[in-house]
Amino acid sequence: MSGTVRTDALVIGAGPAGLMAAEMLSAAGHAVLVAEAKPSPARKLLMAGKSGLNITKDEDRDRFLAAYGAGAGRLAPLLAEFGPPEVKAWMEGLGQEVFAGSTGRVFPKAMKASPMLRAWLGRLGARGVRLKTRWRWTGWAGPEAVFDTPAGPCRVEAGATVLALGGASWARLGADGAWSAILAAEGLPLDPFQPSNIGLSLAWSPHMGKQFGQPVKNVALCAGARRERGEFVISRKGLEGAGIYAVIPAIRAGAPLLLDLLPDLGADELAARLARGPAKQSLANQLRRLGLSPAKVALLREFGGKLPSGPALAPLLKALPVPHDGPRPLDEAISVAGGLAFGALDDGLMLRDRPGVFCAGEMLSWDAPTGGYLLTACLATGRRAGLSATAWLGR
Image (cartoon, rainbow, N blue to C red; front, top):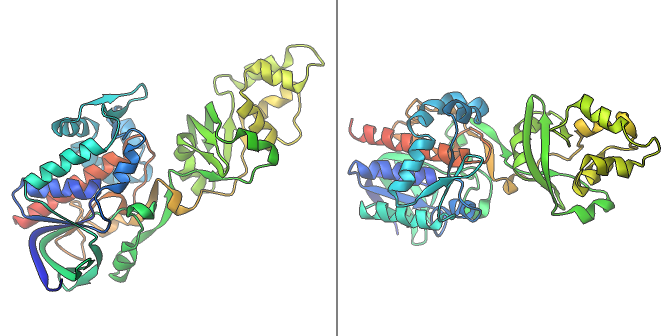
């Protein structure tokens, strides 16, 4: 294939942000071409759906917004327009009934992504949206977007373009961050990619082998000003799970990690309990009487050094230091921090230096924990980019 394809709107990237942008554009009657580098769309969404597809979270808007940390200010107006209530209504409009779990996390009743994705692609197809797979974007030639395709090089001339290129983790699913070199060559500001929602690397002592795969529940993780009640899993590589993910931003900033193994007990009450009992009570019996799980005891012995007994043990139980080797490699991360800086964009998510080109999704420099926040912001930014592109076409 050679020559130029012409379309009203071009969307590069067929993840949640790109498909939402295509939905907004096609709803306005525009001809839309979606170009995806992988053989099929929304691969990362489908992978996330294998564990239930946590699409959003039912909680107060202010608390929901606070989960985005430093990015909350830029995301606030987008999430005000398309936050948890709107995401749920949109899902139900696709025929996907949803429910909220005990923690407020919202899932489709089907508990997987494939039915939702089929319905979504069906809606887009009925509006005439064209999806081209194995089309890898290689940059621009003047106003035209250039692609490597199975049939050879191709250019696309579009009245508006939405970039929804993903982050730089799980490259096998399409988010390899290769686009950053293209935008850097254009002189656009980029924040360095950093792993987010990822485990910590640790080199364990041999005695920890029997704990691999064991969950550690009812614990508080403390890093800097962040204190997070949650749980995690002891793995061969280190520590994994939602509790760890929540404190990764603080750990990236250099804060040490401390574990409160008995978060329901105050330090004074814990010391008093440790003072009670037979004077020659063994350390193992003291820990058993406190109700510590074998996994918690193993962590205490791994990180606590020569353990004291009696009340002197209380400070370690309430603030156990966890020396580690930092986050796992970038490509193992569920998501990334960093990417295209918001300063490159106007309020409609259009590139200031390239009018008519809009950006959305995880390629933007924002960060969020798992729990519905990631997908909601991808959908909200995709929606805003699609609406802004629609307004651009109608100007």
